[in-house]
Length: 552
Image (tube, rainbow, N blue to C red; front, side):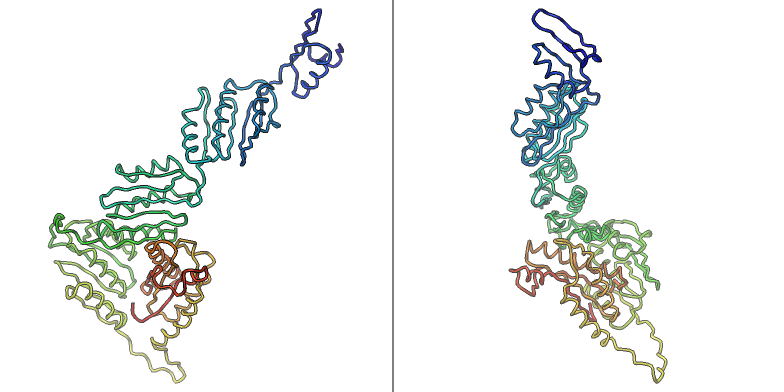
Protein backbone atom coordinates (compact mmCIF):
# COMPACT_ATOMS: atom_id res chain seq x y z
CA UNK A 1 0.00 0.00 0.00
CA UNK A 2 1.35 3.40 -0.91
CA UNK A 3 1.58 5.90 1.93
CA UNK A 4 2.39 8.91 -0.20
CA UNK A 5 -1.21 9.84 -0.89
CA UNK A 6 -2.58 9.39 2.65
CA UNK A 7 0.38 10.43 4.82
CA UNK A 8 -1.25 13.75 5.92
CA UNK A 9 -4.41 12.10 7.25
CA UNK A 10 -2.97 9.80 9.91
CA UNK A 11 -4.81 6.54 9.06
CA UNK A 12 -5.46 4.09 11.81
CA UNK A 13 -4.45 0.66 10.31
CA UNK A 14 -5.78 -2.64 11.62
CA UNK A 15 -4.01 -5.71 10.16
CA UNK A 16 -5.54 -9.12 9.74
CA UNK A 17 -4.47 -12.24 7.92
CA UNK A 18 -7.14 -11.77 5.17
CA UNK A 19 -7.66 -8.04 4.71
CA UNK A 20 -6.71 -4.54 5.71
CA UNK A 21 -9.27 -2.16 7.19
CA UNK A 22 -8.70 1.62 6.88
CA UNK A 23 -10.67 4.12 9.02
CA UNK A 24 -10.24 7.61 7.57
CA UNK A 25 -11.80 11.05 8.11
CA UNK A 26 -11.66 12.77 4.73
CA UNK A 27 -11.47 16.53 4.29
CA UNK A 28 -14.01 16.77 1.50
CA UNK A 29 -16.65 14.92 -0.52
CA UNK A 30 -14.56 14.93 -3.71
CA UNK A 31 -11.52 13.51 -2.00
CA UNK A 32 -13.63 10.87 -0.28
CA UNK A 33 -14.97 9.63 -3.60
CA UNK A 34 -11.47 9.56 -5.17
CA UNK A 35 -10.02 7.61 -2.24
CA UNK A 36 -12.75 4.98 -2.19
CA UNK A 37 -12.17 3.89 -5.79
CA UNK A 38 -8.53 2.62 -5.47
CA UNK A 39 -9.20 1.07 -2.06
CA UNK A 40 -12.03 -1.04 -3.43
CA UNK A 41 -9.71 -2.66 -5.98
CA UNK A 42 -7.13 -3.70 -3.36
CA UNK A 43 -9.38 -6.18 -1.56
CA UNK A 44 -9.48 -4.02 1.58
CA UNK A 45 -12.52 -2.77 3.55
CA UNK A 46 -12.67 1.03 3.62
CA UNK A 47 -14.94 3.12 5.92
CA UNK A 48 -14.82 6.89 5.28
CA UNK A 49 -16.58 9.44 7.49
CA UNK A 50 -18.37 12.12 5.41
CA UNK A 51 -17.09 15.70 5.73
CA UNK A 52 -18.86 17.57 8.50
CA UNK A 53 -21.03 20.52 7.35
CA UNK A 54 -21.11 23.51 9.70
CA UNK A 55 -24.21 25.12 8.18
CA UNK A 56 -26.40 22.09 7.49
CA UNK A 57 -29.55 22.65 5.44
CA UNK A 58 -31.82 20.93 2.95
CA UNK A 59 -34.69 22.06 0.76
CA UNK A 60 -37.24 20.51 -1.58
CA UNK A 61 -38.97 22.66 -4.21
CA UNK A 62 -42.06 21.47 -6.05
CA UNK A 63 -42.20 23.02 -9.51
CA UNK A 64 -45.31 23.41 -11.71
CA UNK A 65 -45.93 20.01 -13.22
CA UNK A 66 -44.94 18.10 -10.10
CA UNK A 67 -41.14 17.88 -10.34
CA UNK A 68 -39.40 18.08 -6.92
CA UNK A 69 -35.86 19.50 -6.87
CA UNK A 70 -33.73 18.73 -3.80
CA UNK A 71 -30.87 20.96 -2.71
CA UNK A 72 -28.52 21.13 0.28
CA UNK A 73 -27.30 18.05 2.11
CA UNK A 74 -28.25 14.42 2.85
CA UNK A 75 -26.68 12.45 5.74
CA UNK A 76 -25.90 9.36 3.65
CA UNK A 77 -26.14 7.76 0.22
CA UNK A 78 -29.13 5.63 1.28
CA UNK A 79 -31.17 8.76 2.05
CA UNK A 80 -30.29 10.37 -1.26
CA UNK A 81 -31.14 7.14 -3.07
CA UNK A 82 -34.47 6.97 -1.27
CA UNK A 83 -35.33 10.49 -2.50
CA UNK A 84 -34.17 9.62 -6.03
CA UNK A 85 -36.54 6.62 -6.19
CA UNK A 86 -39.42 9.06 -6.70
CA UNK A 87 -39.71 9.44 -10.51
CA UNK A 88 -40.50 13.16 -10.07
CA UNK A 89 -37.40 13.82 -7.92
CA UNK A 90 -34.20 15.57 -9.02
CA UNK A 91 -31.34 15.03 -6.52
CA UNK A 92 -28.40 16.19 -8.62
CA UNK A 93 -27.90 19.23 -6.34
CA UNK A 94 -28.12 17.20 -3.12
CA UNK A 95 -24.66 16.63 -1.57
CA UNK A 96 -23.59 14.19 1.14
CA UNK A 97 -22.40 15.50 4.48
CA UNK A 98 -22.37 14.63 8.16
CA UNK A 99 -23.79 16.81 10.93
CA UNK A 100 -27.47 16.57 9.97
CA UNK A 101 -30.05 17.82 12.52
CA UNK A 102 -31.51 15.26 14.92
CA UNK A 103 -34.95 15.51 13.30
CA UNK A 104 -33.72 15.46 9.69
CA UNK A 105 -35.74 12.43 8.52
CA UNK A 106 -38.92 13.39 10.41
CA UNK A 107 -38.71 16.93 9.00
CA UNK A 108 -38.26 15.70 5.40
CA UNK A 109 -41.18 13.31 5.75
CA UNK A 110 -43.34 16.19 7.00
CA UNK A 111 -42.15 18.55 4.28
CA UNK A 112 -42.68 16.13 1.41
CA UNK A 113 -46.19 15.34 2.68
CA UNK A 114 -46.99 19.07 2.54
CA UNK A 115 -45.49 19.45 -0.94
CA UNK A 116 -47.71 16.62 -2.23
CA UNK A 117 -50.71 18.91 -1.55
CA UNK A 118 -49.26 21.98 -3.22
CA UNK A 119 -49.42 22.96 -6.86
CA UNK A 120 -46.02 24.53 -6.33
CA UNK A 121 -44.02 25.39 -3.25
CA UNK A 122 -40.85 25.00 -1.20
CA UNK A 123 -39.90 23.26 2.06
CA UNK A 124 -36.61 24.07 3.81
CA UNK A 125 -34.87 22.86 6.98
CA UNK A 126 -31.90 24.53 8.71
CA UNK A 127 -30.97 23.13 12.13
CA UNK A 128 -34.44 22.54 13.65
CA UNK A 129 -36.12 25.47 11.87
CA UNK A 130 -38.68 24.78 9.11
CA UNK A 131 -40.04 27.18 6.46
CA UNK A 132 -42.94 26.52 4.05
CA UNK A 133 -44.16 28.55 1.07
CA UNK A 134 -46.39 27.77 -1.90
CA UNK A 135 -49.93 27.52 -3.22
CA UNK A 136 -52.37 24.67 -2.62
CA UNK A 137 -53.72 22.52 -5.42
CA UNK A 138 -57.32 22.65 -4.23
CA UNK A 139 -59.61 23.98 -1.53
CA UNK A 140 -59.42 20.65 0.35
CA UNK A 141 -55.62 20.61 0.10
CA UNK A 142 -55.43 24.16 1.45
CA UNK A 143 -57.51 23.23 4.49
CA UNK A 144 -55.44 20.07 5.04
CA UNK A 145 -52.13 21.93 4.75
CA UNK A 146 -53.35 24.70 7.06
CA UNK A 147 -54.16 22.11 9.72
CA UNK A 148 -51.01 20.05 9.14
CA UNK A 149 -48.56 22.94 9.36
CA UNK A 150 -49.43 23.35 13.04
CA UNK A 151 -50.91 20.04 14.20
CA UNK A 152 -48.65 17.72 12.12
CA UNK A 153 -45.31 19.40 12.79
CA UNK A 154 -42.95 16.81 14.36
CA UNK A 155 -41.87 17.45 17.92
CA UNK A 156 -38.58 19.29 18.22
CA UNK A 157 -39.07 21.38 15.05
CA UNK A 158 -39.86 25.09 14.90
CA UNK A 159 -42.07 26.45 12.09
CA UNK A 160 -40.58 29.90 11.45
CA UNK A 161 -42.51 30.75 8.30
CA UNK A 162 -45.62 29.28 6.67
CA UNK A 163 -47.01 31.18 3.70
CA UNK A 164 -49.38 28.82 1.91
CA UNK A 165 -51.87 30.38 -0.49
CA UNK A 166 -55.19 28.82 -1.47
CA UNK A 167 -55.88 28.08 -5.17
CA UNK A 168 -56.11 31.15 -7.38
CA UNK A 169 -59.68 32.08 -8.37
CA UNK A 170 -60.53 32.88 -11.97
CA UNK A 171 -62.92 35.56 -10.66
CA UNK A 172 -62.59 36.48 -6.98
CA UNK A 173 -66.08 37.31 -5.62
CA UNK A 174 -67.55 37.98 -2.19
CA UNK A 175 -70.99 38.99 -0.86
CA UNK A 176 -72.47 39.93 2.50
CA UNK A 177 -76.28 39.88 2.47
CA UNK A 178 -78.46 41.28 5.25
CA UNK A 179 -82.04 39.96 5.39
CA UNK A 180 -85.06 41.71 6.87
CA UNK A 181 -84.63 39.80 10.16
CA UNK A 182 -81.20 41.41 10.65
CA UNK A 183 -79.12 38.29 9.98
CA UNK A 184 -76.05 38.62 7.75
CA UNK A 185 -74.93 35.81 5.44
CA UNK A 186 -71.41 35.69 3.96
CA UNK A 187 -70.81 33.90 0.67
CA UNK A 188 -68.03 33.79 -1.90
CA UNK A 189 -64.28 33.81 -1.31
CA UNK A 190 -61.78 34.98 1.30
CA UNK A 191 -57.97 34.78 1.15
CA UNK A 192 -57.48 32.77 4.35
CA UNK A 193 -58.96 31.60 7.62
CA UNK A 194 -57.84 34.76 9.43
CA UNK A 195 -59.84 36.90 6.98
CA UNK A 196 -62.86 34.65 7.44
CA UNK A 197 -62.72 35.02 11.22
CA UNK A 198 -62.29 38.80 11.00
CA UNK A 199 -65.40 39.13 8.81
CA UNK A 200 -67.42 36.78 11.01
CA UNK A 201 -66.55 38.93 14.03
CA UNK A 202 -67.46 42.13 12.18
CA UNK A 203 -70.79 40.67 10.99
CA UNK A 204 -72.05 39.50 14.39
CA UNK A 205 -73.04 36.32 16.17
CA UNK A 206 -75.98 35.54 13.87
CA UNK A 207 -73.80 35.45 10.77
CA UNK A 208 -74.02 32.47 8.43
CA UNK A 209 -70.98 31.58 6.35
CA UNK A 210 -70.54 29.70 3.09
CA UNK A 211 -67.07 31.04 2.36
CA UNK A 212 -64.31 29.28 0.47
CA UNK A 213 -60.61 30.10 0.36
CA UNK A 214 -59.02 31.53 -2.79
CA UNK A 215 -56.21 33.85 -3.77
CA UNK A 216 -56.51 36.58 -6.38
CA UNK A 217 -58.49 39.12 -4.37
CA UNK A 218 -57.51 42.80 -3.99
CA UNK A 219 -54.72 43.68 -1.57
CA UNK A 220 -57.12 45.64 0.69
CA UNK A 221 -59.83 42.96 0.59
CA UNK A 222 -60.29 42.52 4.35
CA UNK A 223 -60.38 46.28 5.05
CA UNK A 224 -62.88 46.92 2.25
CA UNK A 225 -65.05 43.94 3.18
CA UNK A 226 -65.17 45.07 6.82
CA UNK A 227 -66.23 48.55 5.66
CA UNK A 228 -68.97 46.95 3.54
CA UNK A 229 -70.23 45.02 6.58
CA UNK A 230 -70.23 48.14 8.77
CA UNK A 231 -72.22 50.11 6.19
CA UNK A 232 -74.53 47.12 5.73
CA UNK A 233 -75.48 47.33 9.41
CA UNK A 234 -77.11 50.72 8.71
CA UNK A 235 -79.47 49.07 6.22
CA UNK A 236 -82.69 47.31 7.11
CA UNK A 237 -81.80 44.90 4.32
CA UNK A 238 -79.26 44.98 1.55
CA UNK A 239 -76.05 43.64 0.08
CA UNK A 240 -72.35 44.54 0.07
CA UNK A 241 -70.39 42.75 -2.63
CA UNK A 242 -67.16 42.53 -4.62
CA UNK A 243 -67.58 41.23 -8.18
CA UNK A 244 -63.92 40.86 -9.11
CA UNK A 245 -63.47 44.45 -10.27
CA UNK A 246 -65.35 46.76 -7.90
CA UNK A 247 -67.40 47.09 -4.73
CA UNK A 248 -71.17 47.70 -4.53
CA UNK A 249 -73.51 48.57 -1.65
CA UNK A 250 -77.27 48.36 -2.26
CA UNK A 251 -80.33 48.21 -0.03
CA UNK A 252 -82.70 50.24 2.16
CA UNK A 253 -81.62 52.38 5.10
CA UNK A 254 -82.71 51.64 8.67
CA UNK A 255 -83.79 55.27 8.90
CA UNK A 256 -83.40 58.55 6.99
CA UNK A 257 -80.49 59.37 9.28
CA UNK A 258 -78.74 56.08 8.46
CA UNK A 259 -79.25 56.65 4.74
CA UNK A 260 -77.73 60.11 5.03
CA UNK A 261 -74.89 58.74 7.15
CA UNK A 262 -73.99 56.15 4.50
CA UNK A 263 -74.03 58.80 1.78
CA UNK A 264 -71.89 61.08 3.94
CA UNK A 265 -69.41 58.28 4.61
CA UNK A 266 -69.34 57.48 0.88
CA UNK A 267 -68.44 61.11 0.16
CA UNK A 268 -65.98 61.51 3.05
CA UNK A 269 -63.99 58.39 2.14
CA UNK A 270 -64.14 59.15 -1.61
CA UNK A 271 -65.38 55.63 -2.20
CA UNK A 272 -66.56 56.34 -5.75
CA UNK A 273 -62.96 57.04 -6.72
CA UNK A 274 -61.91 53.81 -4.96
CA UNK A 275 -64.18 51.66 -7.14
CA UNK A 276 -67.35 51.64 -5.01
CA UNK A 277 -70.92 52.00 -6.28
CA UNK A 278 -73.83 52.99 -4.04
CA UNK A 279 -77.60 52.58 -4.46
CA UNK A 280 -79.57 53.11 -1.22
CA UNK A 281 -83.36 53.30 -1.41
CA UNK A 282 -85.44 55.74 0.62
CA UNK A 283 -86.59 54.22 3.89
CA UNK A 284 -90.22 53.17 3.87
CA UNK A 285 -92.63 54.81 6.29
CA UNK A 286 -92.98 52.97 9.63
CA UNK A 287 -95.77 50.42 9.87
CA UNK A 288 -98.78 51.35 11.99
CA UNK A 289 -97.98 48.61 14.46
CA UNK A 290 -94.52 50.00 15.27
CA UNK A 291 -94.03 52.00 18.48
CA UNK A 292 -94.79 55.70 18.29
CA UNK A 293 -91.91 58.09 17.75
CA UNK A 294 -90.57 59.99 20.77
CA UNK A 295 -92.47 63.13 21.74
CA UNK A 296 -91.57 66.24 19.74
CA UNK A 297 -89.88 69.02 21.69
CA UNK A 298 -91.74 72.29 20.90
CA UNK A 299 -88.57 74.28 21.60
CA UNK A 300 -86.41 72.33 19.13
CA UNK A 301 -84.21 74.79 17.19
CA UNK A 302 -81.69 74.64 14.35
CA UNK A 303 -80.06 77.14 12.00
CA UNK A 304 -77.59 77.35 9.12
CA UNK A 305 -76.07 80.68 8.14
CA UNK A 306 -74.18 81.47 4.95
CA UNK A 307 -72.18 84.71 4.90
CA UNK A 308 -70.90 86.72 1.96
CA UNK A 309 -67.66 84.70 1.90
CA UNK A 310 -69.67 81.53 1.17
CA UNK A 311 -68.93 79.84 4.53
CA UNK A 312 -71.84 78.00 6.14
CA UNK A 313 -72.09 77.70 9.93
CA UNK A 314 -74.50 75.19 11.50
CA UNK A 315 -75.85 75.64 15.03
CA UNK A 316 -78.60 74.38 17.30
CA UNK A 317 -79.91 70.83 17.52
CA UNK A 318 -79.88 67.78 15.21
CA UNK A 319 -81.42 64.42 16.21
CA UNK A 320 -78.62 62.08 15.06
CA UNK A 321 -74.87 62.15 14.55
CA UNK A 322 -75.04 60.58 11.05
CA UNK A 323 -77.26 63.46 9.90
CA UNK A 324 -74.84 66.00 11.34
CA UNK A 325 -71.90 64.38 9.57
CA UNK A 326 -73.86 64.34 6.31
CA UNK A 327 -74.78 68.03 6.53
CA UNK A 328 -71.19 68.88 7.37
CA UNK A 329 -70.00 66.90 4.36
CA UNK A 330 -72.30 68.50 1.77
CA UNK A 331 -71.77 72.07 3.02
CA UNK A 332 -68.16 71.86 4.13
CA UNK A 333 -69.38 74.04 6.99
CA UNK A 334 -68.58 74.45 10.66
CA UNK A 335 -70.63 72.15 12.93
CA UNK A 336 -69.01 72.91 16.30
CA UNK A 337 -72.10 74.70 17.61
CA UNK A 338 -74.48 71.76 16.95
CA UNK A 339 -75.61 69.33 19.63
CA UNK A 340 -77.12 65.86 19.11
CA UNK A 341 -80.53 66.12 20.78
CA UNK A 342 -83.68 63.95 20.50
CA UNK A 343 -87.14 65.46 20.15
CA UNK A 344 -87.07 66.62 16.51
CA UNK A 345 -90.22 66.31 14.34
CA UNK A 346 -90.34 63.11 12.22
CA UNK A 347 -89.71 65.07 8.99
CA UNK A 348 -86.87 67.17 10.43
CA UNK A 349 -83.92 65.60 8.58
CA UNK A 350 -85.61 65.67 5.17
CA UNK A 351 -86.70 69.31 5.61
CA UNK A 352 -83.26 70.28 6.87
CA UNK A 353 -81.58 68.74 3.80
CA UNK A 354 -83.99 70.54 1.45
CA UNK A 355 -83.38 73.82 3.22
CA UNK A 356 -79.60 73.46 3.28
CA UNK A 357 -79.47 72.66 -0.43
CA UNK A 358 -81.63 75.76 -1.10
CA UNK A 359 -79.36 77.91 1.10
CA UNK A 360 -76.32 76.70 -0.85
CA UNK A 361 -77.77 78.27 -4.01
CA UNK A 362 -77.90 81.74 -2.41
CA UNK A 363 -74.90 84.06 -2.15
CA UNK A 364 -75.84 84.59 1.50
CA UNK A 365 -78.76 83.79 3.77
CA UNK A 366 -80.11 82.03 6.85
CA UNK A 367 -82.03 78.78 7.30
CA UNK A 368 -83.77 78.27 10.64
CA UNK A 369 -86.17 75.99 12.44
CA UNK A 370 -87.87 77.39 15.54
CA UNK A 371 -91.20 76.84 17.28
CA UNK A 372 -92.10 74.22 14.70
CA UNK A 373 -91.61 76.52 11.69
CA UNK A 374 -89.00 76.49 8.92
CA UNK A 375 -87.73 79.79 7.50
CA UNK A 376 -85.30 80.77 4.78
CA UNK A 377 -84.16 84.35 4.30
CA UNK A 378 -81.44 85.70 2.09
CA UNK A 379 -80.48 87.21 -1.21
CA UNK A 380 -80.63 85.57 -4.62
CA UNK A 381 -78.21 86.57 -7.34
CA UNK A 382 -81.01 86.75 -9.89
CA UNK A 383 -84.71 86.24 -10.29
CA UNK A 384 -84.31 82.81 -11.83
CA UNK A 385 -82.37 81.52 -8.78
CA UNK A 386 -84.96 83.00 -6.44
CA UNK A 387 -87.76 81.27 -8.34
CA UNK A 388 -85.88 77.94 -8.36
CA UNK A 389 -85.22 78.05 -4.61
CA UNK A 390 -88.79 79.08 -3.84
CA UNK A 391 -90.24 76.34 -6.04
CA UNK A 392 -88.09 73.64 -4.38
CA UNK A 393 -89.29 74.60 -0.91
CA UNK A 394 -92.93 74.96 -1.90
CA UNK A 395 -92.77 71.49 -3.46
CA UNK A 396 -91.22 70.12 -0.29
CA UNK A 397 -93.81 71.38 2.17
CA UNK A 398 -96.44 73.56 0.57
CA UNK A 399 -96.92 76.70 2.63
CA UNK A 400 -95.00 75.43 5.66
CA UNK A 401 -91.98 77.59 4.82
CA UNK A 402 -91.56 81.26 5.67
CA UNK A 403 -89.58 82.69 2.79
CA UNK A 404 -87.99 86.10 2.44
CA UNK A 405 -85.61 85.97 -0.51
CA UNK A 406 -84.66 89.30 -2.03
CA UNK A 407 -82.82 89.99 -5.24
CA UNK A 408 -79.29 91.30 -4.98
CA UNK A 409 -79.01 94.96 -5.93
CA UNK A 410 -77.69 95.31 -9.43
CA UNK A 411 -75.89 98.60 -10.02
CA UNK A 412 -77.01 100.61 -12.99
CA UNK A 413 -74.55 99.90 -15.76
CA UNK A 414 -72.64 102.88 -17.05
CA UNK A 415 -73.45 103.91 -20.57
CA UNK A 416 -71.14 101.92 -22.78
CA UNK A 417 -68.62 103.73 -24.85
CA UNK A 418 -69.58 103.82 -28.51
CA UNK A 419 -66.99 101.19 -29.34
CA UNK A 420 -67.72 98.90 -26.35
CA UNK A 421 -69.18 95.52 -27.33
CA UNK A 422 -72.63 94.61 -26.10
CA UNK A 423 -72.37 91.90 -23.41
CA UNK A 424 -73.89 88.61 -24.50
CA UNK A 425 -77.20 87.58 -23.00
CA UNK A 426 -77.63 84.52 -20.79
CA UNK A 427 -79.35 82.81 -23.69
CA UNK A 428 -76.34 83.51 -25.87
CA UNK A 429 -74.03 82.14 -23.14
CA UNK A 430 -76.10 78.98 -23.00
CA UNK A 431 -76.08 78.60 -26.76
CA UNK A 432 -72.30 78.97 -26.77
CA UNK A 433 -72.00 75.79 -24.67
CA UNK A 434 -74.55 73.54 -26.32
CA UNK A 435 -72.64 72.67 -29.50
CA UNK A 436 -69.19 72.06 -27.89
CA UNK A 437 -70.74 69.90 -25.17
CA UNK A 438 -72.73 67.87 -27.67
CA UNK A 439 -69.53 67.22 -29.61
CA UNK A 440 -67.69 66.35 -26.38
CA UNK A 441 -70.38 63.88 -25.32
CA UNK A 442 -70.42 62.23 -28.74
CA UNK A 443 -66.67 61.55 -28.53
CA UNK A 444 -67.14 59.56 -25.31
CA UNK A 445 -63.83 60.98 -24.11
CA UNK A 446 -64.05 60.18 -20.38
CA UNK A 447 -62.94 56.62 -19.66
CA UNK A 448 -63.32 54.57 -16.49
CA UNK A 449 -61.66 51.52 -15.02
CA UNK A 450 -63.69 48.43 -15.95
CA UNK A 451 -66.69 47.92 -13.68
CA UNK A 452 -65.73 50.86 -11.43
CA UNK A 453 -66.25 54.60 -11.03
CA UNK A 454 -62.52 55.34 -11.22
CA UNK A 455 -61.61 57.76 -14.03
CA UNK A 456 -58.52 56.60 -15.93
CA UNK A 457 -55.44 58.87 -16.05
CA UNK A 458 -55.68 59.21 -19.83
CA UNK A 459 -59.00 61.07 -19.35
CA UNK A 460 -57.25 64.08 -17.75
CA UNK A 461 -57.05 66.11 -21.00
CA UNK A 462 -60.75 65.44 -21.66
CA UNK A 463 -61.71 66.69 -18.19
CA UNK A 464 -59.59 69.82 -18.69
CA UNK A 465 -61.35 70.39 -22.01
CA UNK A 466 -64.78 69.92 -20.42
CA UNK A 467 -64.02 72.43 -17.64
CA UNK A 468 -62.87 74.95 -20.27
CA UNK A 469 -66.06 74.42 -22.33
CA UNK A 470 -68.22 75.04 -19.24
CA UNK A 471 -66.43 78.33 -18.55
CA UNK A 472 -68.12 79.71 -21.68
CA UNK A 473 -71.51 79.51 -19.91
CA UNK A 474 -70.72 80.28 -16.26
CA UNK A 475 -74.37 80.70 -15.22
CA UNK A 476 -75.76 77.55 -16.79
CA UNK A 477 -76.86 74.50 -14.81
CA UNK A 478 -74.86 71.43 -15.83
CA UNK A 479 -76.26 67.89 -15.86
CA UNK A 480 -73.64 65.12 -15.84
CA UNK A 481 -75.45 61.95 -16.99
CA UNK A 482 -73.98 58.47 -16.48
CA UNK A 483 -75.03 55.55 -18.72
CA UNK A 484 -73.96 51.90 -18.87
CA UNK A 485 -74.38 48.93 -21.18
CA UNK A 486 -76.74 46.06 -20.31
CA UNK A 487 -74.11 43.63 -18.95
CA UNK A 488 -74.74 42.63 -15.34
CA UNK A 489 -77.51 43.40 -12.87
CA UNK A 490 -79.67 46.45 -13.71
CA UNK A 491 -79.56 47.78 -10.14
CA UNK A 492 -75.79 47.47 -10.04
CA UNK A 493 -75.59 49.26 -13.38
CA UNK A 494 -77.79 52.05 -12.03
CA UNK A 495 -75.54 52.46 -9.00
CA UNK A 496 -72.44 52.40 -11.22
CA UNK A 497 -73.84 55.10 -13.54
CA UNK A 498 -74.59 57.38 -10.57
CA UNK A 499 -71.14 56.82 -9.09
CA UNK A 500 -69.43 57.59 -12.41
CA UNK A 501 -71.43 60.79 -12.83
CA UNK A 502 -70.45 61.81 -9.29
CA UNK A 503 -66.80 61.08 -10.05
CA UNK A 504 -66.94 63.45 -13.06
CA UNK A 505 -68.62 66.12 -10.90
CA UNK A 506 -65.83 65.80 -8.32
CA UNK A 507 -63.19 66.11 -11.06
CA UNK A 508 -64.85 69.29 -12.43
CA UNK A 509 -65.03 70.86 -8.96
CA UNK A 510 -61.29 70.22 -8.63
CA UNK A 511 -60.87 72.20 -11.86
CA UNK A 512 -62.75 75.23 -10.51
CA UNK A 513 -66.31 74.59 -11.71
CA UNK A 514 -68.79 75.87 -9.10
CA UNK A 515 -70.34 72.79 -7.41
CA UNK A 516 -73.80 74.40 -7.13
CA UNK A 517 -74.02 74.31 -10.93
CA UNK A 518 -73.40 70.58 -11.17
CA UNK A 519 -75.95 67.76 -10.94
CA UNK A 520 -74.96 64.07 -11.16
CA UNK A 521 -77.60 61.83 -12.73
CA UNK A 522 -77.49 58.09 -13.31
CA UNK A 523 -79.60 56.21 -15.85
CA UNK A 524 -77.94 52.81 -15.72
CA UNK A 525 -78.80 50.77 -18.81
CA UNK A 526 -82.22 52.38 -19.32
CA UNK A 527 -81.30 54.79 -22.15
CA UNK A 528 -79.18 52.95 -24.74
CA UNK A 529 -78.19 54.69 -27.96
CA UNK A 530 -77.10 51.46 -29.63
CA UNK A 531 -77.65 47.72 -29.32
CA UNK A 532 -76.07 45.71 -26.50
CA UNK A 533 -75.33 42.68 -28.69
CA UNK A 534 -71.95 43.80 -30.02
CA UNK A 535 -68.81 45.17 -28.37
CA UNK A 536 -69.12 48.39 -30.37
CA UNK A 537 -72.74 48.86 -29.34
CA UNK A 538 -71.86 48.31 -25.69
CA UNK A 539 -69.01 50.81 -25.98
CA UNK A 540 -71.38 53.47 -27.30
CA UNK A 541 -73.84 52.81 -24.49
CA UNK A 542 -71.15 53.22 -21.81
CA UNK A 543 -70.95 56.99 -21.82
CA UNK A 544 -71.02 60.29 -19.96
CA UNK A 545 -73.37 62.89 -21.45
CA UNK A 546 -73.04 66.57 -20.49
CA UNK A 547 -76.01 68.91 -20.92
CA UNK A 548 -76.65 72.51 -19.91
CA UNK A 549 -79.88 74.32 -19.10
CA UNK A 550 -81.11 77.43 -17.35
CA UNK A 551 -82.82 75.34 -14.65
CA UNK A 552 -81.78 72.34 -12.53
